[in-house]
Length: 413
Image 1 (tube, helix red, strand yellow):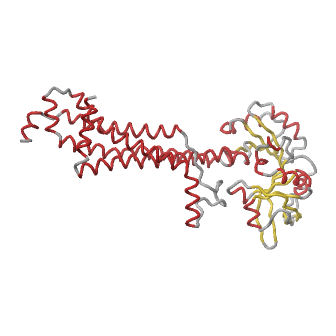
Image 2 (cartoon, one colour):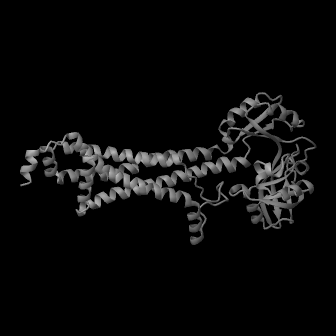
Image 3 (cartoon, one colour):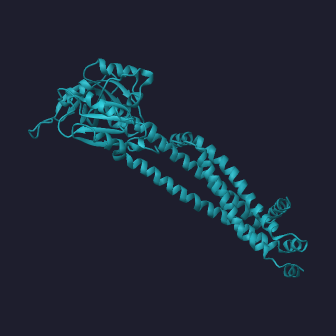
């Protein structure tokens, strides 16, 4: 209790001294800004990771198999084998091909995917079906030669629901230099995922896809949705070895894994910056306490002559330094939590005011800055800040115990 009272008194006296007050305020402000920025940055990286897992991986297949030769004629039998694996949640057939869309003089390359009619009720759909309205899905399977486009792709082509377009599909024949086949399709719906997929993907029914790809029966690929997306590579190899036909194996970690690795790399850099920023902010605590010890030598000497133990002196300056840390951590955490919660709205306002796009949906897999606040990040940042503040007090506190009472009192007169 005595150490806390002395620390409060020393800190209050330092506020009356211009230079000491400036350094003390700088250390507190540095901790506030460091905590706020780091909490916000970690929340933003959490948002990108959640967008990758909860949005992108609902459209991108976790695992996909394609036959080395030909198609899967009896894909249901293959699906039954795959479904035996306990980590496989869903098996769906697909016919995927690269095509060119023509509307007037505008051409656009797309990834055209034929998807099976969903077997679940509209309120229990998953995957890409989540982003297509029930009306569009009904029209897609009820209307021959129909297609659902991404909203970004539709805007690039200048088409709306009900318009017709021309789909140019390459012919897979042995004869070289075959002209692509032209098919007339009707747009029956639009989907909006947000990001580059809106500008690249188009969906048709399996029957329409077979006609476009000249496949009499069967499918070109089989896709899996697994329980743990980070085990997708292991599931892909394990299940692939059990199939009776030779297949090409692909999984999201091979096609889009670089996004997750980039997120983890940036998160690691942020952790490193966390330590460095806090170290710089806490260096001012060291300066403040060293100057305080130098200025208060006579008071320290009197306390020692009155019998105050060295441990109490150390605790006094530890408490004085921690007060700056506690104040900085408290306000920094509040500011960081507020910024993390409102970051998407702040970015949207900035985009509107300056008429710019921070994340171009032609390039990135999301079109808005995401943010997801997690308490573990708040605890980590505040814990590191308090630890660095505590470490910064040790040397000045030890130096205070080395004050010689006789010499300090003599030099003060």
